[in-house]
Amino acid sequence: MNSEATPVKDSPFRPERSDRDTAPQFVLPLVVRIERAAPPARTDALETAARAVLVLLSDERSQGGGEWAQAVRDWQDARIRKVVRRARGAEWRRAEALPGITVTGETAEVRVFPPVPLDGWPKDLARLQVSGTDLDDPQPPAAPAPGGPVLWMSPEVEMSAGKAMAQAGHGAQLAWWELSGEERAAWRDSGFALSVRTAAPDRWRELTASGLPVVRDAGFTEIAPGSCTVVADHPALRR
Image 1 (cartoon, rainbow, N blue to C red):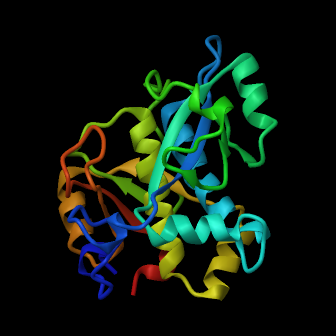
Image 2: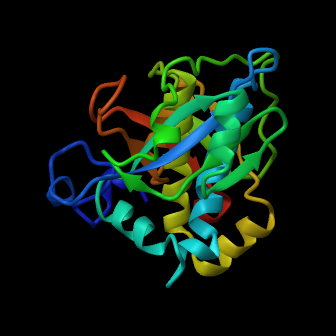
């Protein structure tokens, strides 16, 4: 389902003001480890961030009466904001000491934390920098695995790696919401296998008109409100 066409008018990814804007605002913090001598590859960082969001959503602490469940509900009742910050050395060790989950890719480490109030970040996360997350791929990414989930990034919108990581997380979350319980369980059992790739322009036009979930950014940072940034292409949603 295209998120702009969802029957729920008050979508958390719509740029227009809505009742969600009057609710207390929360943010999902993600911290990517970027050591000077060994920064992660950009695509791996995007994929690891997307998996981190899914791991947080599926964790038992985020479900039912779990210790993170209320924070997750409060976050999802408002705008679905995600902020990616960077850490290295002692900064990373302090971040690891806070409640959260570290997800590891081939070169990337991303730690995701339960949602916090927009103006209530823990001090060891608040002091981390948002800028400086410009990453590169040493080699062009290979073609995505046939038949697997793909988060297609827009070829029309330029984003920093940190912004793109947040958008990939949005795309993964939209796909998660659309899946049945059995489909979610199967994805979880696969280790949340997924690929993040930039679509070719012609393919992008097809994807945005396909009925698959589309992230339209609210325009808080970097890009214009309403920009289409990601299409979530999960096999179970290709109906």
